[in-house]
Image (cartoon, rainbow, N blue to C red; front, side):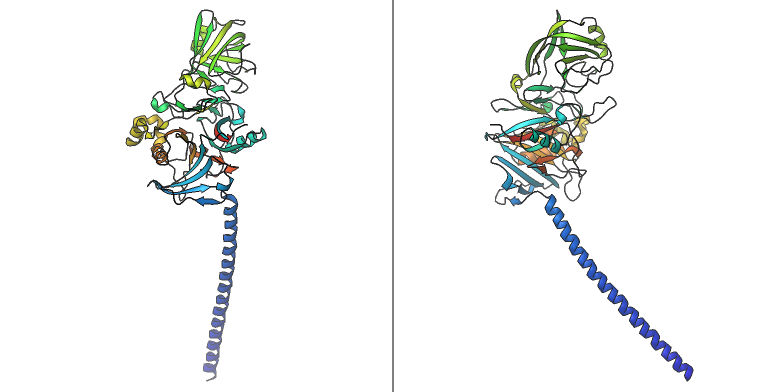
Length: 453
């Protein structure tokens, strides 16, 4: 009996212990749940504050406007901060892409189109934000800017930041390439009519621009292929100005320093010069008061004996189409997207063959972040498409972009450098979401800014 009673007491004690343990675990779980709820609330508050700090300023949604079927939503960003004639819009495309568009009214005398080289020269790169801040220190107030031309990010010759496309700034002819069927360049077909410029009377131009440059020495004439570009078999004769950088960065080119000419070089140009130095090894220093004529080795060896120190001659340039001779600001891309509101025929065929009709431009058949410039009779558009961001935006093909631009009223459009370079700066900050969460340094910038009075 005593043994049985002892066992019964032990059993009751075990039950009591189990009940206590169960109560203890229950209390602990309740306390953890309370802490988790408190922490989640704190984190939610923190996230809201972060979003509030990093998102664009108050958004006004324009609900009454009738949108094309391809557009799920249109938001007007930073409406209160936008001056008259300028708007910043965000579109949600039905194909899963987010598009940011800065618009400028063409008839507004207080706004104008402008361009800026990264670090004010060809060689080197700079972010869009960095360029706008640097301009602000000079008293130039930018409203929006988008990354522009294609170019070399770096190579074994030190040519990091050298653009492939046209650049005219404040009337100075900074860069003119040849037409070349290669990604980044403008091909020698109507698809390559991708240089955008503005004439002094406000006319918008979109063309394939040709240099038409000549050097005349005695009775000999030498055709110039490009300005501030690579000197190679594609462009055997290149003119370098101090806008390129400290030196020409060529290898084994025959080079001649031309002095006593009028600077800067412009779209309609004629000046006498004197040869002050001859260099058969390349990579000549570019004096600020001179230009350097570089000739590819095979052709240069024939001109080396004709052009000597103290030779005199003339330099002539006449851009075509002729209207480009007076353009004050111009910038180039690589492929035309729209012409008079119609998708460019080569781009339509490119989309139909999924890039097969132009394999050198196959990048355009895949979805990526994109940048572009467009216009119609009333407005200029600077555009960025976000991409490579699941859940936010997957990007667009070039054909996707063309049809979307048509749907928002763009009549003419060209493609700029895209991918991780795609960034739209507006009213003080980057408004889109670059692919790698940071601004990539780029080659030049297309700008909307307040006009000088």
